[in-house]
Image (cartoon, rainbow, N blue to C red):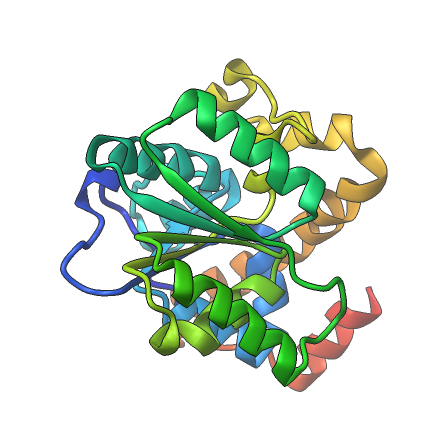
Length: 253
């Protein structure tokens, strides 16, 4: 598929260097195929987690690789447990002040040994230089062991990739909706939905107006990309980006 998807256990996450962790699902895959900066942000991740049954199925369909889904929420909980053991520090960048307050309150109860910092940046399509300077200042003064970024894709991945080298932290994780899941402002589907690979359906049923395009429309587009790559694989042509005509067809659909 052209993406270095992480296939190991979360316990194998690198710790000897600054690590940028992103996730990929069928929606972000489709968006990245049309957005060069976003694709670069994903491809150049130090760790790219397969956060979706579509990606898991695609890895097997295209390359015969059997991997397991690792959701951003699983990563988040794993890292919080690690920080609790060492009395570490984490910083949440993104979302609203209300959501961040709920996160801090829950962390105080669940993981009292963790020191938490937060900042809610302005809601706008693009950040100004002043906005970026303020975010970097807040984070670097706090010096977190782990930075969680929750500004929705592809904005969060691009921001983390662009500023990785100047962020004073050991790990940067773009985890989007996990902020709302942990705060309780959005309910994550239950364990049985997750166990049987139907978390996407649970989210679709809870928020049909917001999620239908992500799961249904882009599900079809994702399937098209997979069949295209499989066809090229079968005829011995290296998988490549869709042609200009193929992009036009996809955009018109």
